[in-house]
Image (cartoon, rainbow, N blue to C red; front, side):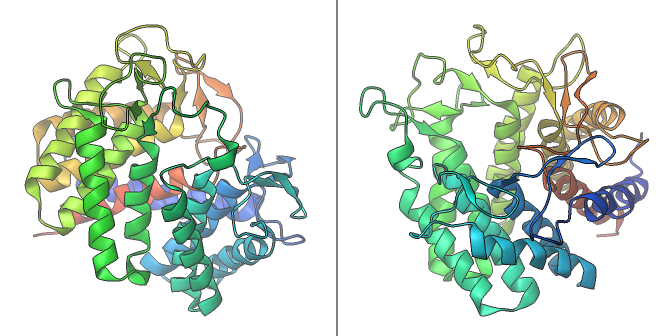
Length: 392
């Protein structure tokens, strides 16, 4: 593949603007009821009309972000509005907590048991408010963000299934998403709040969840950051760890903190070495830190978002550090991801492969895969390679 950064920038730009976005623009819009269809088969046919709050908000975010970062295209803003107005009307309960799922018409289906619904709402409405300039959207964003801050120490609240206090545990997902979300909210937050939250989250991720000896990111730890010898305590989620590290790089870059950037790159490389399937290629979905059988039966599947987040982390890591290992891994990941996930025939990317790299679910969207990881990664990789190809 060589170091043809210009050609790589073009590849990602073209895939985003001429393949992936048109797929969602053509197939996912529910102009009748508002919001989006995310359950799309390989060709884009809708096979279920339920609306999942994570994915609805993520699609609002995607089209709003593109309006803000690339150009304010009328159809992008219209698509973002179609979701934002539907969600503002139907997405929350009376107390302002965001549901997990709705019917096509907007009736609640699944209770607001998950803090991530609020996270993605804050992200979506922050970008949307920036794109449309309307105060009501700003208010929705701020309220959702305050929900996240209020619930972060007990993310599931009354919906938590675990028995209290027997084995207290905290999850990487919370500080990791809070770090990224806070950057998204930057324009709406006082600079003191921004700096405080970013410093706290970076410290927590890089000290409590990072095993200093092994250089691996653990998914769950005890409140003091120590390991717990159990299924959850030994869980490594390679995609999560790698995604968290590019969030950390992004924060550290703003402060010219090269030490933290290099530490994050080290972690990415350690995870890749640990999680790469030497026999069939690609990254495992879940792993046990001690090599025991993971409890997740889908542990050996190869997932779209894991590989896309790795491409982002490696492209960003290479741009920021120029480290040779980043480039070697980037090439390996690029070859695997583009040859296995991208669907040359019907557009967009497959989401789920079996261990051997064969398509496992013939879908382009579902309950967990929507218009988010693919376009975001294509956009971010395009930006990294464009920066690398232009003279300093």
